[in-house]
Every structure is written in structure tokens, then in C-alpha cells.
Image 1 (cartoon, rainbow, N blue to C red):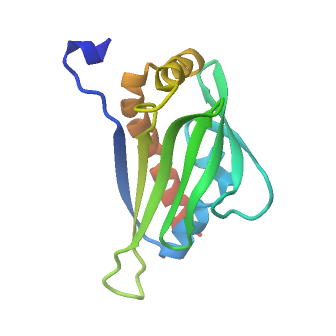
Image 2: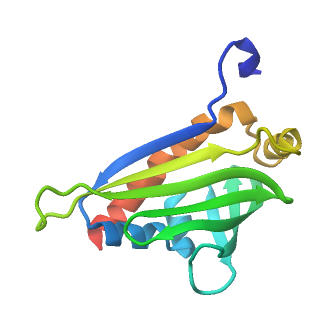
Length: 171
């Protein structure tokens, strides 16, 4: 186990990209959960309860790494158009992670929109009942030990952000 060899486990990961599009355009892509399969290397489908995406909206994410397939239950916690979007992920009622996006208008010139899009992830499998069990389930279903999840997510975030950037700039 890497952690036992002196490597500290990462609990929070964040990546950013500059997008040549307005903050509302970027937010529209980020908050459209039905398009998540276009962005994420792991997500292949989402099932959303209801049509409106707002705090409290629940959805299920269907994920894949290689031959391994699993689902997570999620709930939107933040949905502020043009500014922020986030959701909590759980499995079998146990907290797993918080995923979110910060959207910042960084344009110097209003005629040339530019937005900084930051994706972040926080591992919630700590300091709560069932954290060790949730970590074990994560390894069983995904094949990824908890101490390697941050590195894998960093790689996935870079791919996700690049795809979102391309789509928003074409919009």
C-alpha cells in the first residue's frame, strides 16, 4: 500500500482550464448532467430524477473503468448559474465524495469572454461511520485503491475539462 511507504494520501484534488467563452455558457455545459457522459472518462450514463437541476436534485451516475461497472447516487448541493455547481456522491448511503465546479469570469475585455473553470473533488471517506467500508467497496467496484483515487481523478479531470472547454468554445 502506497500510504504505508510514506506517501500521504490526497484528500482534495483540483484542476483548472481557461475557456474562451462566457461564464453562463460554461455553466450551462457543466450543469447539464445529461451530458456528463460526454465530458467524463468514467461516466457512461446518468439517470436524473425530474427535469430541473437545482440544489436537492438527485441523480444516479453509471460509471466504468475497463470491464468494471458501478453506480453512485448523487445529490446536487450547489447550482448558481455562471458561478458554481457541485454535488455529493454516496454509495449504499455512505458518503464517498464531493465534486464541484467553480466558474469565474476572468475577461479583461467584455467583447472577448474568458472564463476560468475549476473542477474539484474531495474524498469524503474519512472521519465518518463506514469510511473504511466505503473505501473497500470503492476498490472492489472500481479496481482502484482509495490511496490511488486522487491521482486517477486528476487525470480524469484534465480530460473532462478539455472536453468541456472544446464544447463551450464551439457553443
